[in-house]
Structure formats: C-alpha cells, structure tokens
Amino acid sequence: MENAVGRAGEPIFKRLALIGVGLIGSSISHAARRAGLVGDIVGASPTPGTRKRAEELGLVAKMYAEPADAVRGADLVILCSPVGTYADIAKTIGPHLEKGAIVSDVGSVKSAAVRDIAPHMPQGVHFIAGHPVAGTEQSGPDAGFAELFDGRWCILTPGEDVDKSALAKLQEFWQRLGSEVEIMSPEHHDMVLAITSHVPHLIAYNIVNTAAHLERVTDKEVIKFSAGGFRDFTRIAASDPVMWRDVFLNNKEAVLEMLGRFSEDLTALQRAIRFGDGATLEKLFSEARAIRRGVIHANQDTPQPDFGRRATSDAKAPQR
Ligand SMILES: NC(=O)C1=CN([C@@H]2O[C@H](COP(=O)(O)OP(=O)(O)OC[C@H]3O[C@@H](n4cnc5c(N)ncnc54)[C@H](O)[C@@H]3O)[C@@H](O)[C@H]2O)C=CC1
Ligand SMILES: O=C(O)C(=O)Cc1ccc(O)cc1
Image 1 (tube, rainbow, N blue to C red):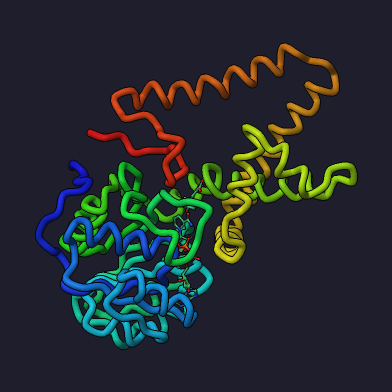
Image 2 (cartoon, rainbow, N blue to C red):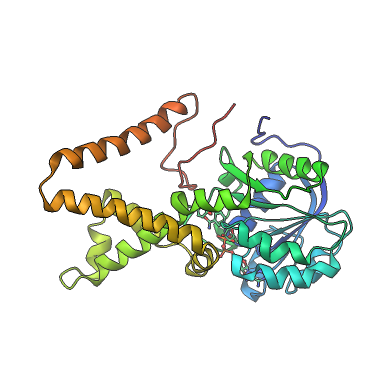
C-alpha cells in the first residue's frame, strides 16, 4: 500500500481525541489537518499551560483537563502521553467511549500498552496499539510539526481478534499522516525496539553523565567539545526524562536481555583493546560498517536521510 504524504482528502473520522498534546500529539494534529483526515480535534492534558498553548496554537478546537470529557463523541481516540499514565487513563475513559470508536496509542512500548489499556475497553470499542517510529528530543505542544511522520514507519500491534475494518481504517489514517505501516506482535515490537531505540537512549544518557562526572572535564566542556558522535549522544540525552523512565520501567525484560548481550559484546571489544588485538577490532568494526552500508544500499531508491531536518532518526520507511 502506498503512503500519501501531503495529499489532502476526505475525512475518515468525525472527531479525533488526543489524550496528551506534546510532541507526538501536536504532530498528529498538524499532519491530520494537513491531510484533511478528521472533522475536528479535541485534546486533554492535566497541565493548564499545555491546555492553553494547544488551544492558542490551534492544534485542537478544545482542550479538557479530564480525558473522560475529551473522548465523548470521538470516533478515534489516541493516547499520546507517557506509557506510565495509560492504565489510569484507560480506566477513566472506558465508560465514556462511543460504541464503534477506535482507541489507539503512540507509546514506545507495546506489551505494557496492551496490558494496561485492553482490560478497560468496553464491548464494541476497537483497541489497536500503535507506535510511530519517529520523534525528536523535544517535547510539549510547540515541538510538533506536520512532516514528523513523512516516510517513517508506524508499527501497529493488533490483537488476533481485531476487527479488520477498524484495522484498515487506522492503517489508512497513519498512511495519510505520511507513514508506512508495519504490523507485528507487541512482544516482537518490544524486542526490536529495545535494541534499536531503548538501549541506545540508555547508552546516551549514561555516556553524557559519565563524561560530565569526570573530575577533569567540566559540564561546560562536555558541550563545548562535543563534536560528531558525542554531539549526537548529547542530543538524545536531552530527551524527556519522564517519558524514558516509563519506557524502561515498562520494557524491563527486553531491555535487560539486550543490555546483557550488549555488555558481552562490549567486553569482547574491551579484551581486544587490552591485549592489543587489532585483527579482532578491525573485524568487528568492519562487520558493523557493512550493516550500515547494507541498510543504505537497500534503501538506494529512497531519498537519503536529510540530517538537517527536525525528525532526527534516519530509519526511514522505504517508499514504494
Ligand atoms: N518523543 C518521541 O520522540 C516519541 C515518543 N513516543 C511516545 O509518545 C508518547 C508521548 O511522547 P511525547 O509526545 O514525546 O511527550 P511530551 O512530553 O511532548 O507530551 C506528553 C503529553 O502528555 C500529557 N500528559 C502527561 N500525563 C498525562 C495524563 N495523566 N493524562 C493526559 N495527558 C497527560 C502532557 O501534558 C503532554 O501534553 C510517549 O508514550 C512516548 O513513548 C513515540 C514516538 C516518538
Ligand atoms: O530523537 C531520536 O533520535 C529518536 O530516536 C526519537 C524517538 C524516540 C522514541 C521513539 O519511540 C521513537 C523515536
């Protein structure tokens, strides 16, 4: 199926309720309005400043303090808040959801999203968890932009008993936001994202703190001399601490499994350095380089990553 970047068309939902209007919620609003996908958009946030700003920016027709008030009359509800808030939100919105409504989310972790949301969904409501694999280190309603999802993957993790027409509708929604949709199980999603996104963020937080804690290196020098690779780490380590706390608390097993493997591989590199084993170092570096080059080669028909754009991850979905 083709995605439909920038093509405005018929609305497929009459009212979209965004529970949380930060980077991802506001980007969905921008992209959904660009594509003419929804009749109107309302939102919810517990923070008065966020409610005021989301209305000022025209991201929503109205913001509510209570998620239950925002979901009334909505045929699409998307949870766009930190994963740790899902259970409480699902419990409070459950009784107020419209029959036939689709409920989804954008959380970076999927097994916990299903665990925390699904039990609170009433009969006749279609719950399909999702994750747009696109973002930046910024947060809040001012951070969003319409192009965030263009050419990026959106992973959906429906249950086996999913309503096929609800799934097709949500798939069309993400395609018209600009994404390419992939379907997989929540468990597979969490394993893949643990190594491709979660552990890299943990490493970034850790390496920036390690550098900042060094007696002979001041915090100021960490930024001043952060060129190249280390600069990328400082950008990633500027990501929202609450969002990432919730990712690690809710993808514990997969992250610990991947961290274990990572530590073993790091130990192999450490040994090679200690014993002056240049052949091993060169072999391991060559293998890693080949993977990056293989990815670029596989995507040769795709516009190559534009490192200047605001969506900073270069793992673009192939355009077909
Ligand atoms: N930041 C990123 O690059 C990406 C984030 N995600 C996922 O998207 C979700 C949102 O992340 P961001 O938009 O980056 O965060 P953000 O910090 O920019 O926005 C979060 C929003 O949730 C609201 N919120 C907090 N607690 C709430 C509650 N109890 N009820 C209702 N709203 C509440 C906040 O007021 C704020 O509007 C997270 O689950 C994250 O895992 C997914 C892809 C990329
Ligand atoms: O800013 C970056 O480099 C990211 O990796 C953004 C990001 C953060 C969390 C996600 O679940 C998906 C994408």
